[in-house]
Every structure is written in structure tokens, then in C-alpha cells.
Length: 387
Image (cartoon, rainbow, N blue to C red):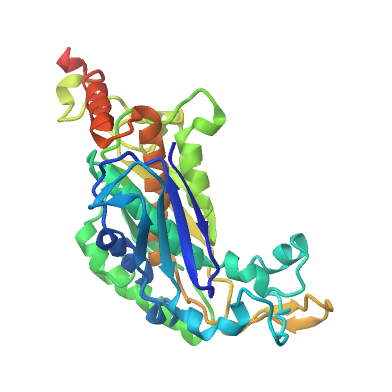
């Protein structure tokens, strides 16, 4: 019921998006979408590309007088850097042959993409494989976030680790402090150590990965389903976040740490009604990360993702040439030293997209008023204290 497509290359004219399935009557503006696009461009360790671009999504269709129409939305994010790449990336046949890029970069889509699509120029692969595509996803995520806000669902992220520097302890951080940090970490001292670690990597011509954590609060019990593998919400969330460039691992709730615990310590005790707050069916802990049996259980959804370091290095790794197979240094093109802070924002986008899809599957509606009626009616059925 809710789906999207993105198109565009890193140095092409623009990124474009088609979004289908939103109900009519949802308030939406370009300024609202711009907030998340700006957050994606921030974060210590980014490349000079973020100083060139000033991402803004123009709404071309699907909105009238500030409200969605129920028809498909189309968005365009223009690439300012296109001005410097017009000859290399022009659509029409080139009058003069451009130099082919054949220096393969380990860790990128260069080699498998060139082999799969029969290309003798890696440029034809890396342009679409670039993480620049995630700007379009964040725009979709902003639209989905606007929908979830109508139901009191909030999604945030923070940086848990960069390289060997890690935040200690558990629990939901102060989101105001997160957004004020250059690396999106609420702990000021840890944040400063992360910045220093990025500086050291930059000076060495190296790069750093890390971990970000996403929190979604306010989701009702029962999103997703247990009946088929592809309807399980934890699987859908993991796939969505795993699709982000450089993500190599996803854990929900306690994640991999649960493997070390006995069952008596790994599960979340269901509290009796006299210990509930405003929400029914509360737990003593949240090791499941808000998901059981492929469905939300009413607790916050907590998801962690592991990012490998960016693959393009200022001091290139040994590699081979696509055309000859001969030994050569990998190609270097302007690149980030660390993307973990920005990746958290992209992780938020993928989580809100999946949750929007799940909400619409559960509550439907061609207009927001209908969706809200269905939602409120369902909430009345899940609290035994109301019966």
C-alpha cells in the first residue's frame, strides 16, 4: 500500500522520487522535508561534497494547498555538482570519448557491478551505487515521518560508536543533546573523543566505521504479522536498514548480546495491569527491542546497525585494473572519512518507511480521517481496563 522508487546518479542532473500509497489529507511541505535532508548532510567527517550541495526536495505532484491528494507524490532533488560533471555525465552521446575509469576500489560495487552489467567503465556503476542515492530515501523518510507524527510515533537515532570509541550504558538518550553534537552523540566527552578519532583517521588517509542506534516510540501493539516470513516486521526492518550503504550488521533489542544470556535473563517479563502506566501490556525490560513474533509489542522499537568504514581511501588500497587485471592502486574520488552520524539519519528514514507501510497495512484508509478512525477504534480493543 505504501511504496517508493528512486532514480538518479551521484553526479547526474538530479535525484527523483515517486511515492505511492499515502492517504489524502496529510499536511506536508517542502520545508518539512528539508529538515531531514539537512540533518543527513551534517555530521563530522563528511566530504566537501556536502559543502557543494544544499539538498532540497521540490514537490512536483501529489500535494495541493499543503495537503496530500491521495495520488502519487513526485519529488526532485537537484544536484548542484552536476555543473562540474556535465561532459562526463551527459545524457546524449558524447562528441568526444571521455576517459574510462578502470581502477577498481575494494569494498565498492565497482567490480561485481561492472561484471554483472557488462561495463568497461566503472563510472557507469559507481554513479548509481553511490550513497548519494540515500538523499532520495531520506526525502521519502521525511514524508513517512510526517504521517507517523499524526499517530504519536516518533523516530530518532544516535551514534553509539565510532571506531573503538563507544558510549557506555543503555537507555534512551537526550535527543536534544544528540542533535547538538557534531557526531550525534549525547555524551559530550565521548563525542569529543569521536571527533579526535576521526581527525586521526583523516590525517592517516584512512576511514572509520561504527554503530548507530534507532529508537521508534509510540508504535501500537500488533504492527507486522507472525503468519508469513515476509510479513514479519523485524525481518522487514532489518532488510530495510541492511540496504543502507556500508551497513554490515543489524541487531534488534539486545541483538547479538542475547546469545550470551540464559533464557531466564533474555526475555521481557509482562507486568500485571496494576503496574501499567498510560499504555497497556507493559514490560519490565525491553531486550526484545519492541518486537516479538514478527510484531510490535508496544515497547520502543530499538535497532542497531554496524557500518564498515568508507571504502574510498585517501591512501588507496592495492587493487587491479578492470581492463587488464594488472596490479594498480585503487581509484580515489572525494570521500567521507566517517559517515556514522549521517547514516543514523538514513537509518531513521528506513525505519519510518517500514513503519508507515505497516501502519497503512493495518489501518488502511484513503483519507487521513478514515485512517485515524480505524486506528482509534483499534486502540479501544487492546486495553482490558477499558472493557
